[in-house]
Image 1 (cartoon, rainbow, N blue to C red):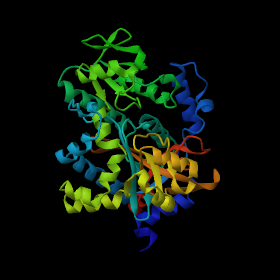
Image 2: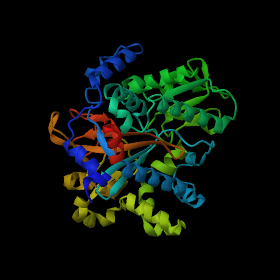
Image 3: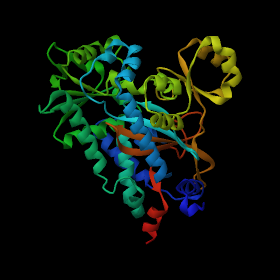
Image 4: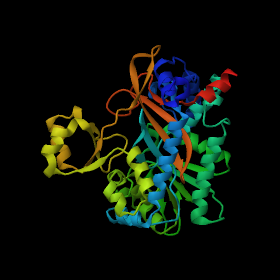
Length: 433
């Protein structure tokens, strides 16, 4: 099959040979910095976030994008099964059983793209970076007239409208037709968070939709028995950016109480994390026998096993086997997030391996990430993860993260969040025509 008729090879060829740039990152940094300056006296975005944004686009074949959507839909079908929910929630904290009827905002499905198709590496709740990537998408459309033909959206405003609809839908699922008046974006010491610029962008987005917005740490929020109060005003909905996924920290007890009393709508929420983002779920979703016990239909099992690398619990009694096979696996803490405590098996020292054996870990079959060559920027290839931002089974935005090292990071020159161009012969032909 020729490159002209093979979308996989076409995207791979472009990722190896295309030296184009897709966005004026310095201009975007300056614009975001000016926006941030209205809310914070911190140093400039260029100084504080030098590797947040990349101008180097990643090319994803339309077929691989379709396969990602198909796998996401398949996972949604499994998660909807009562028997799956019963099994997963059985091992989760009690708060995960509480159900406000909402779906949970901003799921992130992260993939490595291989010649055999995209492979799901993990699922995250409160996946960060959506609005940062939306700004990058807008800059991409301004810098490159051809970008519209290679993008998921032709209208740069559509993803933002989709995100507003998501929060309004979360609210309506819990509160019906009551008006949504006040959203609090809550995280620990928000102004010190690396993605604080995104909080400011969300504040602006919500305010354009006539919603009052507060950006607050948990200690600025308290429960008076009837309402959750932030700086003197009742809060309707919390956009939850905390990584205390089950609100177990004593300093979050007021949030926990208000949530369990249904006095505030919380999204994303503990139930969503337990159903989707617990790393233990990867063990279940990649195990044929376990899926058959859940009575998942054979065609769906085949889809899941093809797209989700095998994952297994790491048990200390199997330490000898794990050490012998370590180079074939990626080790992840079952309750981890943001690549913390994650190790490639071939990089493990005996000391770290011993610590893993004493902790709560899973091992996932090692799948090498895609690579992006861009000779003007770096002689070394950049690794690539592709994130699908998803709500209620619908892909809202697709973005890449370019990096070097064991896991994704924002420390790589020319790395960071990157635009995704969708590649097919038909798309390229329409640009040439």
